[in-house]
Image (tube, rainbow over all chains, first blue to last red; front, side, top):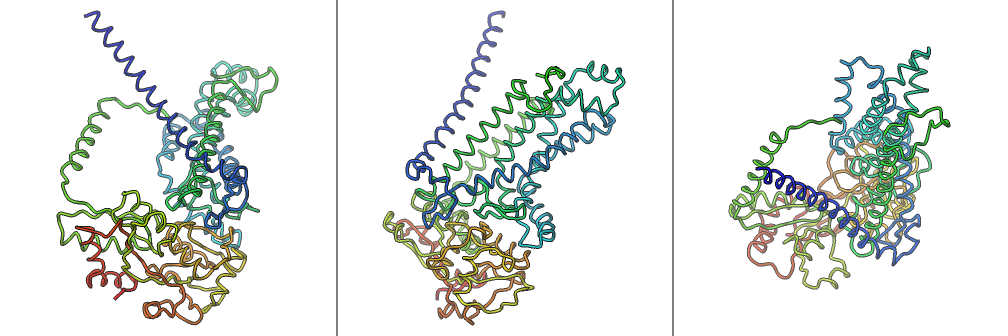
Length: 299
Length: 266
């Protein structure tokens, strides 16, 4: 009896190990495959992959406009999402009465479950016409529309990780601050936020990773013009949208360059997620670190 | 994100679902014909499929989109039995895959469309004017809407209208006829091009060199932006693949072509 129980333990352990190895292996294989497919593009085109003209049927394969489009739309998304998410997280963790938080928290998390094409549809039908009215030009397909839609999409990610961080701050910090006569707001600003900063930085970085990878909703609202946007009302194209729009038709070098876009995205998202995880573990903590005053590092 | 789920309550339905799915796949012993490619031809292939399957219960026809180039590639790598394309086979494709055989199944016109309110007041346009507008791209006068690279409709448009000129990168790019129509219908100063089969009251088609895009003008080739829609096979078709293509060309199949707003080849 004794032996068989331990035997089961060992077998289960090995099965788990095999499964974990398998998923890691799949990741490695996917990465290898992407880079193998992308390699001919770099070999053939060299650095001219980073030119700014995209017209594959006339042999122009520059993806710089798409890189900029991706960066601009995700930056805009962060600009909208970060203040909103941190505010929301503070509300849920500190301000809201428990009954309210119990309803509001799942509601925010529910946003994750909405398929991205639905966000896109709302963007096209509702947001774009408003933006077209405001800007007085075009169809409203713009990096602004993309930024707003993306911001709503990453809101739950950033909110729930930040909130977890805020809740993990030891109760004693808050009590001590209040006991010293600090107001609620002073406590939040000078104690809670600095103490939870690694989680918040991690939340933002992970949200950014999600924003970069978003495709469907982006394609529907950004206009897919391979140009540098000169204002937030201009349309642009993202790396993901470029792949999704053209991979079905692409052959030869055109397809290789689309794989190169994929490889670039892979590197960007991998880098960001690594940063995010490091930040979450408290290995790096950027804002609010004022010397030694805020020691409440959460890990 | 705290989600607590008890293992067995998830496992049980999942196993049931898996068994049911496998069962469904396993039970189906029908012959299948896979058709895929151009989104312009897709409404036709879908209607042909419905009509064809009504008379052939032992044959399953699957229809996919993906675009003309995907249709050719799909036939070449065996993913599709029949590829649908809305342009001529390119010489590069014929060279690479000499086994490809095309079967003309319909004519189509590419209409130039604007918003119904037509704020620029244009009802007729020359090929040269269209080319200039698309080369200049979106301005305060026009919002230019185009299909993406590789689309058969775009290739017809580029061949017949643009010539050596290029569509500006400031144009908006949409990936289907439906998306183009939707964009033009919702943007006051938009101009785009659309397969004739998709034109309806939500957009206004304007005449090109004084000629309206219509069945009669495409048939007598007086309308300049027209093309042939093909089904493509690997070698001469046989069996149910040939049967399906014959059906598409039959008077019943061509009636469907006309019902869908395209132009019969007879």
